[in-house]
Length: 394
Length: 237
Image (tube, rainbow over all chains, first blue to last red):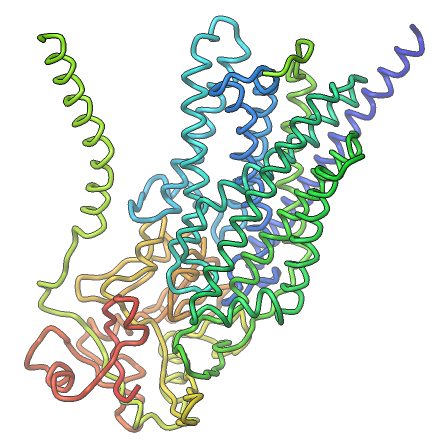
């Protein structure tokens, strides 16, 4: 009895230490934002060619994963699978946590963060950014209502219709995120209708990977063991999502390669883009795809460690993919005069250089810390632990 | 029989309802996006730039712009450049020329489409501007501009020209010297060009010098394939 009490006390201490650590990261992020506010974006690595930097990589990963993690809830509520239903509340919580972290980073990276309410007041109907303001806040409201309906017995009747609404909403939301880039017709890296579906499939993989990591942490914390059958099923599902997103990325690059005017850009990303090419092949393809696929599908890998490593690799691969996609896509110069060689004082015809500054890194980590704090506190005070009946295949 | 008719009627009603709900937002957005046609405007300010007369190495237009608008003239990647000279070389023939590049004041500006707050806007006379009080500094317009015409103010500003308000954390670009144009003057770059290569005027006035010249000589829009209907036209590209 006394040892278990001592253990509990130790855990409590660890809990507060973790919270304090994450709180410190948030404070550091706010300090970075304060400096950016005072001195301007000159203290970041961004410039007039690479206008979106590392904070966007963090923000977009968090927002896309926030939508994808709801897949777990949807498979439960829309398709009625019991093991997913038991995990729907945790999925909803993670969605809210990551959305909060991602949006915070996005807002605080604005040139004028104090005007963040303006898009809601001066709404421009043709702007996909403005649509996203509606999509993000709508998602927030819907997921909170969905969580309420799932966790409060009196509200249970609404959980099915709300689950359906969330299911539809998150598809539209990730479409909106993909459209931010799909609408940029003049840039070789973007302006492609394949981007919204690509982001949707990627969201499945990233969201599920984050879910796995958090679920394993919660089980370990509570000294519980996840049934191996459940783990194996969800691991295989992650494998299918990885293959799906890799397929979309291949289609995106293959279609670009087919357009003569985009071959230069593809050469840059895939072959001679230096850090971007290396990151693409070593970071995204190898660590983000080959490694987790091997850990999932190779025989003899049926254990928790391989599932955890595969999930961590998918998350890391996701970050690397976005870095190459967002920063590499901007570093390659705009083709203002197709077929001509150009040069100017404003970087025309040159590959732009970009090195993220410590302030951008702090801001991005701050977003992760916000998501971490919301998740940890909620899991601590409310019942988000998945409760499985003994496993029966659906 | 009646049952079947009722069912059919209900089915048709539902289908029409669903179709209306599905199409209505699209129609609404289309109306919003294309509602403000200014083709009937009597004034559309524009420029015709003769690249054959644009001397290589001459930067008088750039210097005049910087002076008029209070820009530092710095060339770091974080410095604002509203107008720049681009040296262009045809890879296949070796033909070389240079031209000034700035905001092309599109009739269908992508920056205005993507701006979440409406800070990027187009005046009735075709000049595309940024309202510095509404710009939140999201830089989406910079991503959308096909001409790399926009700059973000990366650092605090000092000694601004009161006619040309600017702001740290907001996006800016060539205003076609709107403060001069509204006083009946020419933009600074057009006035400064030693070879008179920049012809400024009203594209919608058939009797204006620019409209007559555009009818007479062969001119082109940069990235005409994007169908943006630019206000800046170039001769000799």
